[in-house]
Amino acid sequence: MLIPILLLLGGLVVLTGGAELLVRGASRLATAFGVSALVVGLTVVAFGTSAPELVVSVTSVVAGQGDIALGNVVGSNIFNILFILGVSAVITPLAVAQKLVRIDTPIMIGVALLAGLFALDGQIGRWDGIVLALGLAAFVVFCIRHARRESPAVTAEYEREHPATPKQSGNLWTCSLGILVGLALLVAGSKMFVSGAVDIAKTLGVSDLVIGLTIVAAGTSLPEVATSIMAALRGERDIAVGNVVGSNIFNVLGVLGVSAVVAPDSLGVSAAALRFDIPVMIATSLACVPIFMTGFTIARWEGALFLAYYGAYTTYLVLDASDHDALPAFSRVMLLFVVPLSVLGLGVGVVRTLRRERALERLAGVRGETQR
Image 1 (cartoon, helix red, strand yellow):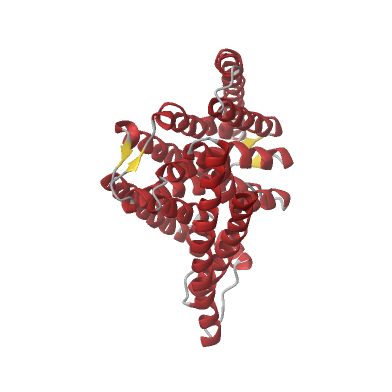
Image 2: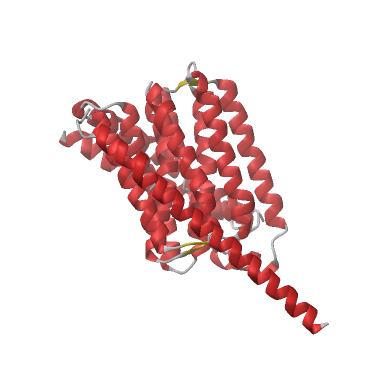
């Protein structure tokens, strides 16, 4: 048991280091060739934080562990929303940009529903993967076009965060070497990580899907954890939310899409994932709408609610994997009491927010008529 744990931890360290080298090298290389820092931030940096999920999932598919690849995507999306947003909001209430509520969050929900639709026949085929990958390309084009319409103040802020690299051959060679080394570390780290995860699953007697949904999903999401928590601590509260939403979109379109394309036949979807885990991923995506709408912030109590739900989800997976006698009672309590009370509380919050906005609009109208 010690060797698989060391492989898992060692692979995680190598994965994280490889992703960091890849992001730094690619960012500096792009800015050296005149690509705007804003576009780099929306593409290279954003996708770089999801590089571990991509490499681990593709490696798992090639090795014949398709359940780990699927569990990695589904589990990462659930982990990103419930755990990362939960922890970040508990640290400090998070601001939610209106664009995120009106555009990016509906896209995140849409791609989650699309993945669930593709999985209904028990597999995600190569053509399904191609559609998802094309969706990622369209999303990137949309982000770049929208970035070009950003205000000069936003562009200047990105320039300060990602200063351009001078066009020097030495720097270009260094950046290229960093990219190559980062890719090599990602591949090596993913093999170690997947090998350790599979060995642990066999030792504990649990399925590859459960390992993918828990250990692998949490491990490959560490870049998002670090980015969102640091953004919250620095007061960049909108970055913490945008990082999670963007990562979830990339996970479904990019990671799941590429995994389905490279799979020897198709990416199999187990009955357990179709019955429970994929619906939970869709439900957590939908849960963002009422929470994001409550004053365009995520309050501390809402972050605590997210964390509690992640604890409940993990508890369910453990009880189900061990076929524990407490599972039926736990499920009844969640379905009959916890979930309805949470929905009621969020619904009341949304109604209050809408009433407050209407009251402010009426007040603004009255003031306008008075000034006339």
